[in-house]
Amino acid sequence: MKWGLLGGTFDPIHFGHLRAAEEMLQIFDLNRIIFVPSSRPPHKLEAEITSFYHREQMVRMAIEGNVSFSFSDVENQRTGKSYSVETVEYILNKYLEDLKLYFIIGQDAFQAITTWKDWEKLLLLCNFAVMTRPGYQQKGLGAVLPEAFASRFTYDKKIDGYSGPTGNVIYFRSVTFLDISSSRIRESAKAGQSIRYLVPDNVRNYIIKNSIYKK
Image 1 (tube, rainbow, N blue to C red):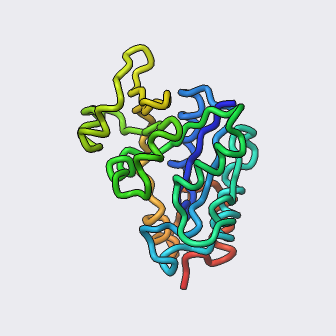
Image 2: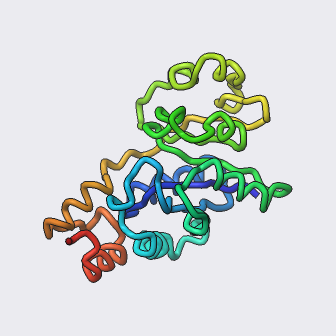
Image 3: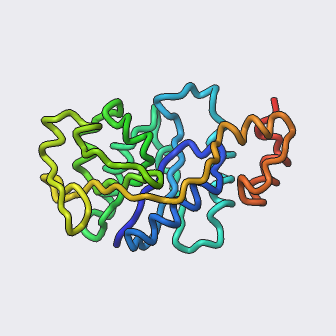
């Protein structure tokens, strides 16, 4: 099995998330992509994010009809803050013998990877698939990671990726960049402005019906 793991706050999920996931599914010939909303992001105050329940409903609505997309509430099942390294460990421990896991992450988030909990361990646990913007020139791992750690990876031209000591690879792949942000959607919804064509219609209707972003 080859699975992709796409985490995020998804507040709300939008077409940018969905299109990027679809492209990564094809690029790496994945069997499925699991959307994993963060329950208590360590870099955000709980007061700043919508309840997990509403974000879960919106993700489920957005991915329905795509048999290659699935949902996991694994981070909401744990107490305390949501850390990616714990989520990856959980999934690998459950499906270790049959699973090849790709942790899908945006370019901007990868640039800040060294601020994540146990980032060294995380980068060695599974494959990393970094989504870059078209035209982005990858300058090598040394531009992001400490030199001593980056030196443990070797660029493999055949797979166009950086192979690490555990056999996992860090890939950089360009995807279609849709200039859509969840924060802009929240601001527009709060102001009563249209969010049509930014999110799937069922998600838009859910936001309006439940006044998600109106105080």
